[in-house]
Length: 162
Image 1: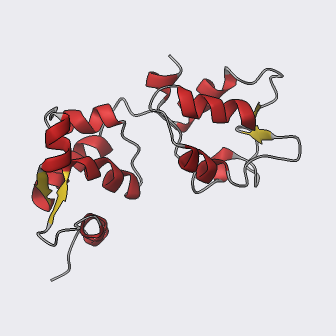
Image 2: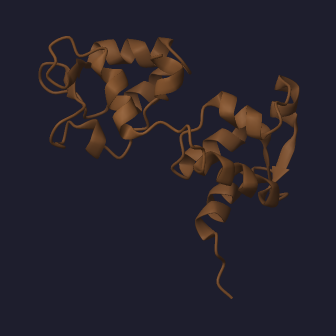
């Protein structure tokens, strides 16, 4: 019999640091992101039942309980599309040419919405800036295009730029 969810089980298992086939609530967002989703911390807390900070650190979740939560995030109709992110970045495109300054984007990612850490920003921005410090976010995909970058996990448009 073939396991229908090997990728999900593997990702979940990587975060089981105790060996009890469970993960801490505060790891659920990371697992979902490892599986290609981009939920906000607020969305994850909601599917977990809005637990307290203490519960986030102390409570543990089984794989079978995780799956419906993941499915809810995957099927969320309010999830931003790539075009939503491009529209949000246009706010910072002063020249109207489909580029933003990397330094400005770093500030935005570190200060607005769900703030990213310096390490997360560095990982995201690695190889994105051209020789002028600009990042191409629309138009033809290129080595600088956010559309073609495998690490590009944009912040949700509806919470950050609205």
